[in-house]
Image (cartoon, rainbow, N blue to C red):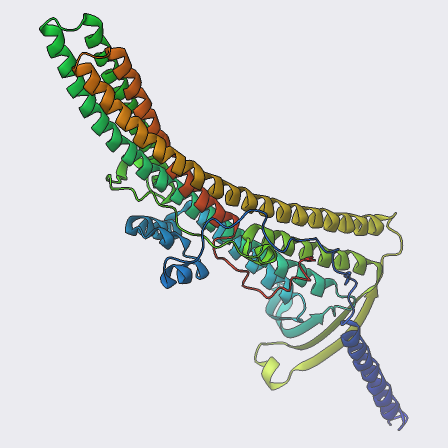
Length: 491
């Protein structure tokens, strides 16, 4: 006889529905609370940025529209119109090991971001098992089970969301670091290449000078052989010739060093890298000095520092979320039987739903310390960002000033070199006419050589200053993510 009350099943069903309703309400509340975030929303104090640069631009206008397009596309080395330089820069993109390291760092940061985002989603798992047991005095028995379980920890206080925001900013900072490494490698290559070509020009100059000194030494020796001049004149001529030859050897050694540096930058062993001598175009290209405020969007290191501030700001929200409880929801559905086939034909079903709320009651001030650490980290990031902006503006001003003064210096040096060359020729003519001593010729030769080498060095310095200005301006790079100047703390 069945003694169960007819109302038992109905009452149990009502309680079950109420329990499910409460669980659904809890889930809905968790979803609403997930919109909470404790990261500060106050922007950093604005940093005063001048409207114009202190020093005038080095040149006006553009040589061609193609060069302007090359700058806007980040291919600033095309301003030199040198095919060899262009090919070397392309090899830097492919084989430079520092760039590969920076690219790997970006890939790591992106993988960490995907890990952070995965924490927002529910976790689903399953298990399938078969077990058999028996013994001498007992029959063999078996059991099979199949279960599916799910869990979800809703982001009530924005901990995961702020962690995702921080990592997303770190990814952008890594991308900016990659751009900075690329620009640094390109600039280092351009500097070494221009120095090598200047060394080629200086070696060619020494070839010409040495040929002239050899003629002078031959003239002096002939005059000595006929008894017109003393032995000291021939000794002075030989000493001048040998000194010039020694200088040429030193220049060849410097050129080899530049060639080795280029080989390293393109990812090749120096022993297998040869760069033949070629003419050097000593003119420095025109570089546009953009507005100071745009510098904050075009310098990779400044953009990286700004993204570090954003990441540090989000970490404050992560630290503050530890003051509040964590909610976790679980659900499982399982089936059992004596054999695996029973799981399909006649399973014994079992389900469960669960909710847990956990809160740290006492931690001896650990959470307070973590929040203070996050706040201090943000202040440090802001200070680094501001310092990077100031450093960037200083570097631009330095290169603008250098280009302006070097242009004037180069013109003076060119006039001086022409005058020294005329004096050298006049002194040689006077010596051959017997109107002056060979000491005066030696002095004029030394002055002429020094003036011509000084002109070459100033022309190289102008080109290196142009490269430095390009690097200080960011090389035409621009942050690929949207960023308002107000967010970057510009005033």
